[in-house]
Length: 343
Image 1 (cartoon, rainbow, N blue to C red):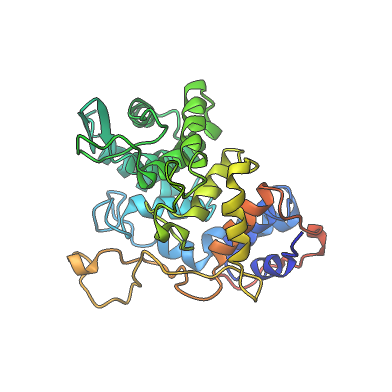
Image 2: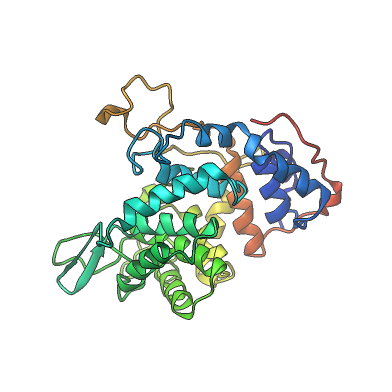
């Protein structure tokens, strides 16, 4: 079995308290009430990435742009803040969540979906990301959240996923639309168990597993080479690491149909013991384009790392390998996790 201790040491020495906290919980297996974990958790909201994601909120709960503005809108910030384990009682997140509910629920109308040719064709990833964030914040029981959940459940296609393709011949789910939707259902299931939701989760996982994560179930060919690139954040995009991370959250990391993808993930580790970013879907905040212009789209408010060893990618890779039983780490008592300067 591979030795991943150097990578974990690197993560636990991060200046980002979110990375240290998640590494202790998800990799080192420490309890929430341990001293080391409590120290990291207390510092999360003071981390530089989190502070930037929380900054600039307006009275309406947004951030001076449409909630869905890529990637500076409140919709995307909420997903990033959840993935950075920001405390659930954070007031900025709850104000942004209220705006999210108003935007998606509105007057009770269906948005981003149409019923055509026997299928509900839906931008399900929008609802899925929202459902995940809202459930994390303790809003799974809100009637508006339940409305969003029911829209998702009613729109699930026979093969287990979702699609927004309006063409009559489109009858196969979109991996892009389905992955974030699966994540949202898993987050909701953790907050409020529901048999119908659990069945939808199993069905959606089967979509990805039946394709070996990235292969055509008919020809066996790789569906899209872009899916094999390690990138973070993925936003609404599909890639094999994010797919395995989400499937791991559903408790299915041991499925043998993930074996090839796990082999690929292991082989992608670089000589320094970490995993590196292989491109990105975002542009740095210093891009010289007005935020509201087309050229200013996809500008991030934080720097997730565009090259070299990447903390979130390395963290997620190790999470998946641990869940699949391919990585066993030494005792967390050997780690030095004293708080360092927040980034």
